[in-house]
Amino acid sequence: MTSRQIVQTGFGGIECLALHNLTEPPEPGPGEVRLRVHVASAAFTDVIIRKGMYPDLKEKPPFTPGYDMVGVVDAVGPGVTRLRIGERVADLTVTGAHADHLCLPQERPIPVPEGVTDIDALGMILSAVTPWQMLHRVAGLQAGQSLLIHGAGGAVGTMMLQLAREAGITAFGTDVAAKHDLIRSLGATPLSPDLAAGEALAATQGGVDAVFDPLGGDSLPRSLGMLKPGGKLVAYGFQNKVSGRGGVVPIDLLKLACWNWLPNRRATAFYSIGAMRRKHPDWFREDLAMLFSMLQAGRIAPVVAATYPLEEISAAHREIEAGSAPGKIVLQIAEAEAATARVA
Image 1 (cartoon, rainbow, N blue to C red):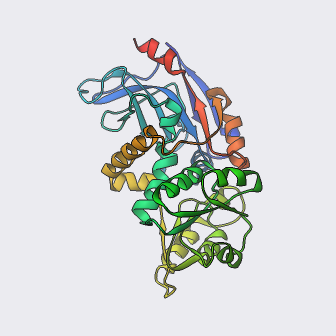
Image 2: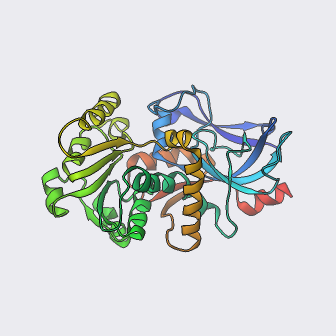
Image 3: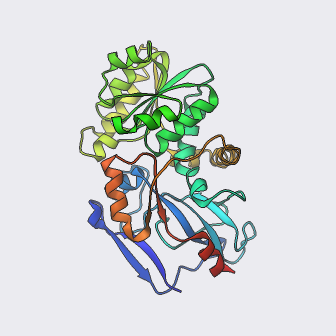
């Protein structure tokens, strides 16, 4: 049985991504399970990793990228008791998911509820746990409050708007005009991404209780200026730096820390889903279970912009970097029916 994987050969452009064919899939070691990957995200985080700008990654190329996945257990190593062959699971892998197979410690993958499609389940991992934790565990917003998120028409943004609507929080979202109808359809007010802080204050009738900023650089002081007194700025990325639009990551982090000491009656925080999971692993399981429940109840649903096969990873990265995709980009690595048949 052959097994394909994307290999990142270095840090840099799309040319660093190559499709490799293995003569045999990897074998799980003691306490490990092997997963047959059905779907994986292609996310801006993968672009950050590809360019060598992801602060939480210590691994050096060559390695297989892929931040999250849904698949089925197709082999188990010695001593595995927690999962069984044929069980469908999800995980936040950080790397490794852009492959037909990967091996993980048995305690990491989380079972996917029956009746949830692979793509819907995938949409609950990186793209939904991120806004859920920022909204509830970092910013602590309540019904009747307000928020603004930059890049509202993307994978994280569209889910944040749905979660805000569910929680009774008024939402504003910046993005290009082509995504404004989508933002409105999710119950939020669209704003231009070029809006100055003063214009945003006017548009939001005096500012918001929280701003969620994945951009960094010059966007951070603008975002701070969009807050009401007592509000909180939550940064969760450095897209401007990665896209060549300015910003220096250590300086951005220093600014966020310093602003917390100023008497401006506003707070700041930097959010990383990986760091949060390491510090509070139980939260990740609790929050993903909550999101699965909301998905099953029809209260939220991922917005999917495009689906690519694994061999078109370069095209997926181009669309991510263009920033034009309304919602999430998915890599369809194996059809669920075919993968299950091979296990049986």
